[in-house]
Image (cartoon, rainbow, N blue to C red; front, side, top):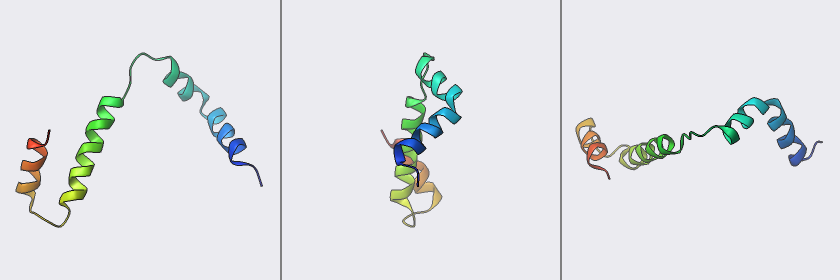
Length: 63
């Protein structure tokens, strides 16, 4: 059975172009991912508690 490190290294090698781009490109998806994470958090918190109008108000009013 291969080790976890060997499996990780094979995965990196398989997608070397993406890894190289992530390290060398000047842009980042960090801000977008932060907003998506916040929206998903609010959605999870509100699940089953309210109708769409309250969820919309919470998303638009959330800091």
